[in-house]
Length: 300
Image (cartoon, rainbow, N blue to C red; front, side):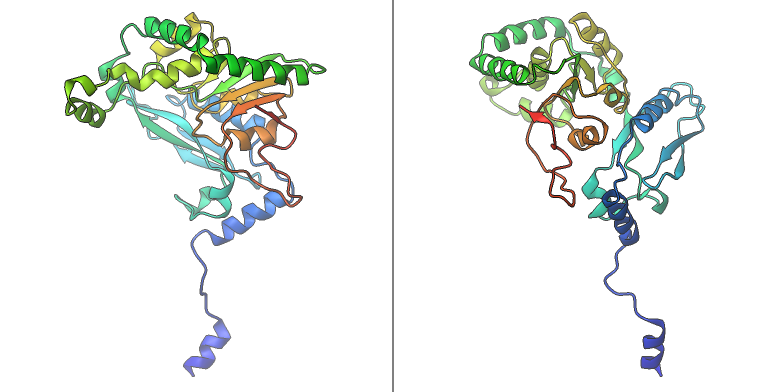
């Protein structure tokens, strides 16, 4: 009797939470649905900019339906939490176990929060402009800079039939980022001659900005950093992680050294920039074996 009942109703074996959503995400992607749309990224950037007055955030799912996410900072006078866009890349949608409420499983972007209390307490790095000037001179005198300049000029010549109207940067790093406590404790435990200056944690960030001195930059910065990058020739666009993507078009050079967001995947849905300067990483293949990340993009 038990055996007959099992055969009648069927057993659910091997399924995992979110299995249906990953199947649905794959089907939508294979049918040509874009994971990211320019208007969605502009919209969520604007929403986060109004987070003090919005009770809920509106997020669009792959199938076009909408999810509303409560804003825990609504009505808070001086919030220590700052919202940012948390991108859900392709493989997270189709291969990994989803995290969060089932309603968000097919969202390619969600809202997350950064605690600003330590940053607010410690304040910005002192004399960061002098540090930048020194690092810029060091970079410009290096053989690496010479090689990079040569490669970049060659890439521009190769695309001479097309017009470059802008350079957009992602993930250059925060010029006012101080080391965490664990770094300080480890550094203090070293012999005096082996200890590093606290400002060494932004050495790479300074180089990134030196490479991209006059380009628009998209990253989560504190107000002091925004003032600094404007002073050295940058234009700061957006502060929540999504707005800068709207600036990328087919006449753009993109520089993205160490992004946390799936920059290549997102831009592949929005435009085909003339030159893409980035690290080579994982690709997303479509049914025609074309890389979703890199198809028709000149990569340096």
